[in-house]
Image (cartoon, one colour):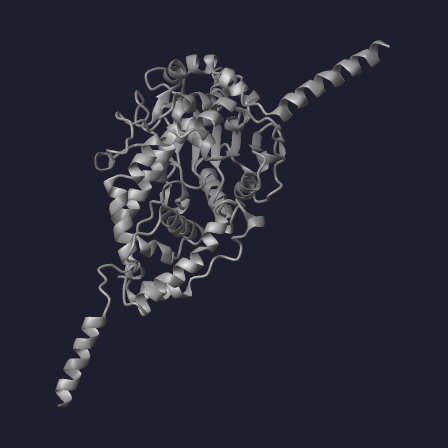
Length: 475
């Protein structure tokens, strides 16, 4: 009788136990490729300086470090408490869902970070400061000839500049601290109000108009309605214990919470990542790549144009290093900006172009794509271009060369020797682009038509005051 009782108890446990084929809490190798919200700690490579040459200038453009969500995302994240309670209820009361006990327990204990609030929207996180300090330390170790602590006393040696946002300004200060030991070691340049260098998109009405249209979202919207995403809706819903499919907004909020929390605390796993299988995270990663390919990448010609002012600035700095009077140039130029800045620069330089465009229909065939924002656009992603003076092995002449690093990985530029490029070759490829670069396309008829009434009134008032001032001078 006792044995029968034990048997029936075990049988009852088997019948009521939830099926779970995966447990994120037990995974020692979780998926970490979260597109533009990837943690830089897992994505960057290792600087490989050219030891047979002498570096004479660094040109660095960096995205800000890990930040808190934007003001539009924060309210959606707070709603996750309600969704969390529904998921727990589905498992414990309705006996639905397939989360393992450890993942379910993590859901029950989940609490939104105290700093995720409206007054902290888009602010740099503590991990974001660590991102930039670490980059600076590794850069100084790779190029000690250019980054010696005694050199920062000379304003001529370095140029620092960021856009006018808290996350970029604090990223710059954290970088300076990692480089020279103090956040105020260097006085940065003051960013202009109309920043056509580091935030050209904000000064380009035509680009903004084109971006606000639904045309650039066509491929992403097709993908949302395609078989991969529809299967994802079904599987995620059943995994979390819902009989009906959850909404796209819920999937987006859970995905954002998953990747933001991993970027904030790189040593922990967000319970919201347990909502997705690794395959489903690949699908969501591709969806964002598809979005950014047309938003800021080579999918639109205007993005290439938008990235050319920064490419032109780099080109003109490097042109001044050709001769023997390169000592007149700074040893380092350091800019701190945003995703749009980095990705449009990438498009202008022609790095990471794919032979075929990204489309909603080629998810599986794009597994080896070059345009993968987890690697080319995570938090703190950066371009480090190094101008070298090299001794020619065939003669006594000094040859100018350039190496590009993207997120500290060597860029295998076409026509270069394992990343080491002859400057004359780079000049041939970029000179025409640099000379023709301008922002005229931003103010075509369509773009000008979008100028607000306030802008027109402001322009008329400015002209009026100018005339009044002129008359006062005359009289």
